[in-house]
Image 1: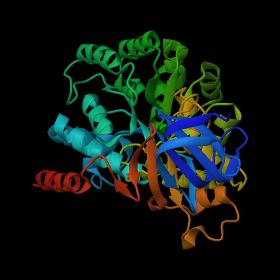
Image 2 (image 1 turned 180 degrees about the vertical axis):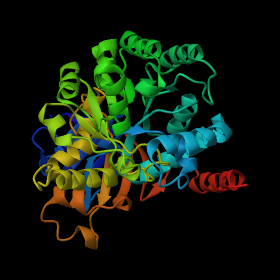
Image 3 (image 1 turned 135 degrees about the vertical axis):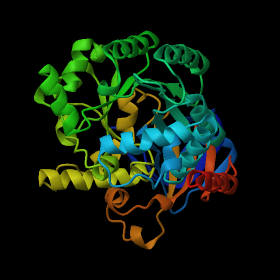
Image 4 (image 1 turned 30 degrees about the horizontal axis):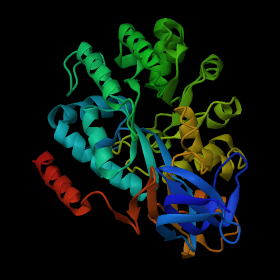
Length: 440
């Protein structure tokens, strides 16, 4: 007698892009989910296994694929969106961001700002974001409330921040966070140094050592601007990347953000250390910071993922839109339309994030025993038709609003464009109320 699969959710009649190593597709396809994991991904009737399910979603005329991975964010900064525009990074930080944070970066506002960002991310098809900000317990609380994944990263700096007045308190806090979220189904941890130029050698070493001890990633903004590159060369005779390497920062798992100015030696360091990179295209273009050498890094086997950065410097939270801009910018800079094909682009927005954070056994593709994190997309719209090439349609035509349903850890958190876990109107009202206080 044929075994009957018991499951919590079945998705039928779907056009499935698994994004596995072979880019396997099923149309019509069937997905079965149990206890937050994928127990079947394959053809639908008449070849499907027998199953019983608690809930069924008919995905006729829908595209189903892995959700997007946001590899770098400052989600709580959404309350500053639209302020401090048209400035270079140094001016933006010193004249605007840090003074505003001194007034408004409170636990309550970080929680509210993160909720706003997570709503936007989910609505555009993101299931996970790697954060670096303050009051990260509030970031975790917001992610839990809305039902999405997060990798926490309390930003460590040399000088007092809105959260802590000295570095020692950071490390006590981080130890508590690692213990609290060690086995959490949605929340992970990174140890985050803000940047080489805002952290002392001692802080950088301690970040690396703590990350190694707890076997979690160390994360850092790196090689972001020409100023950073030039100032390190002038002062030390080496780049900031080489400076970190000499401190031992790359002796353990690192995910580096931006990486716009990299020498040949720098690229070898990233490759040999097994580091991941997140390119932050919209933010870098807005701040005129530089361009990450994406193709060269990926040719070396370095996983380059997509991050949106904070809403104050982007100003949107859509991995989809950053992916498209990344592809078009690379083609323009390299003067080569073949430099990034559509399959590679989609990997950057999905599985490369998982690889950068060494979560590829859990996320990034739709395969049996991986986490059930996926999106359903409404393709029955003019800008999708005719769909001669589905991958090209995703990269060049898809809109964030085309995402209809989002499932994270086997749980439907958005269905038919409605967020199921939070009161969206209430949160938007709270944001507007805060905006009035900020503008007084």
